[in-house]
Image (cartoon, rainbow, N blue to C red; front, side):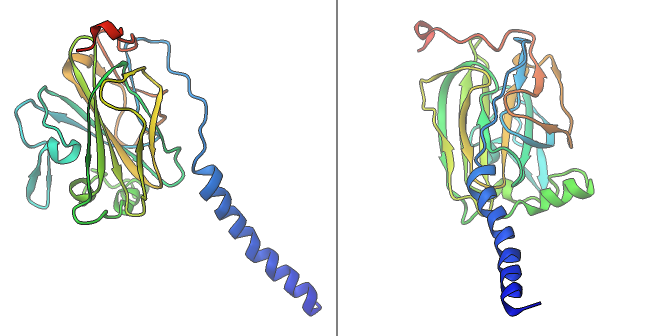
Length: 246
């Protein structure tokens, strides 16, 4: 093989992985596939694509729902808000290959938006990814990022007064959490409201008033705006009228 041919081959071998990286970094990661919410008006939808890491029961007035390194974790440490009602906290891990667009789980009115910076910096979520790969349960074991990483929480009030919270949690290399909604906005179930750049997690707390049954399990892969995470005894798809806003 001539030196010229060797040089062309080496350049091609180098360019191909680089081109794939650029495609992933600029197009694949930011893809925005069309999603159609299920027809069932009682379906509470997943806010993110990814693997379900936990489905935890949270009791109203109780500070603990999990234990990490010998200590309890309160819901407000994860979501930034305390649980006024009993319900279920569902964690969804988004890998670097997941669609990172986040969607609204129920129709309602945004009542709270709260950002919390990392303390003191974002920790890696590689542990939860490894746990999912090796099927080590519980999948969130040893995942201290739940306590330390940057997060943004929004609360959505249903017409019946029940409040669903969605928390975007940043990973080590995340450079921005994006949420396009503000307090007072009327939102529809399944609509896109934000994204987290690179691997991350999205949690949703659903109060008992909107839970007739839980439809997912840890380890299951879900799709934002399409997968049903819970079924409600009442409709969660009706958009509140502006007149009902307080």
